[in-house]
Image (cartoon, rainbow, N blue to C red; front, side):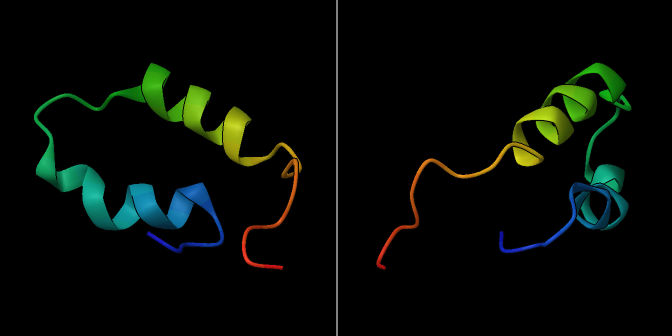
Length: 42
């Protein structure tokens, strides 16, 4: 989606889901904070 921070995505789109998906968001934040293996298109 292009958001720099997972919290931005969560703030904008969390209202679309009935559950808060806190565990899923924690896992996404962990993955998103890892450095990229290589830059696509570079």
